[in-house]
Figure 1 (cartoon, rainbow, N blue to C red):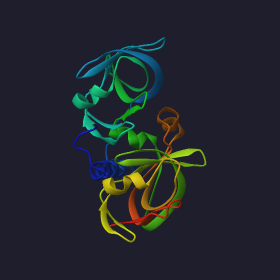
Figure 2: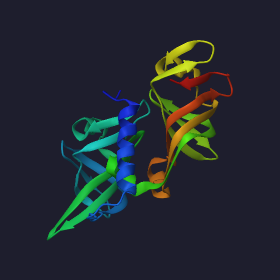
Figure 3: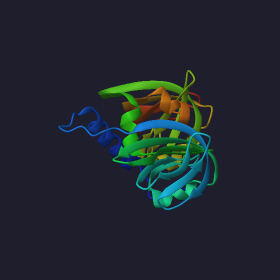
Figure 4: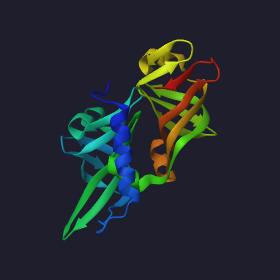
Length: 235
C-alpha cells in the first residue's frame, strides 16, 4: 500500500505541470531526447537502476519524485520509497538522454514493470496532447475495467481513462460519506456516468507504454453507477 497519498496532492502536481507546459518562459530549456526500451533490470539502488538490453546497457539516473500507480493505489513518492516497488527482471523504460560537454547522462523518465507504473511528473508536459477544462462540467460514460483505493480506470471504446477519486461525497438517500465507505458499491464491470471539470488527453506514445489514454479529475454534478443506481455528488 502506498503511504501518505491524497488525490489532492496529485491534482496540484498535475495542474502545476500543465501551467508550466502552456505558459511560455523567457528562456526555454533544452529538452532531453526520449526513447523507449525493453530491458532487463540488473540492480536497483537509491539513486539509479542498472539495465541491460541489445541497444542500452548501463545506469539510469532515478532520483527525484515519481507518480506511481499499482493495482492498489496511485500517488507521489520520492525515489527512495518508489524503488521498493521495482525489482530485477524485465521492464519497459523511457529514457531521457542529455549531453553536456563530453558527458552523456541517461535519465529514467518512466518505467512499467508488471502492474507497477512510474512516471516523472515533469514528463507529463511531454506526453500531454490536450488539456480540457470547464467551469461547468463535462461528462463521460464508461465501464470500470479496474480500480484501486483512490482511482478507477474506465474503458470507453477501448480507451482506458484514469479517474482520480477520493474525499467526501453526498450519497443520494443517505447523506455525507467518504469514498472509502462507498468504494465497494462501484465494481469492475459496472457502467458509470461521471461529471468532471478537467480532462488531460495523453499522446499515443504514453498510452503504448502505460495503457492510459487520459486522466480525469475535479468533479461536479455526480458520479452515477448506471447498473446499481448509486449516485454521488461531490461536497
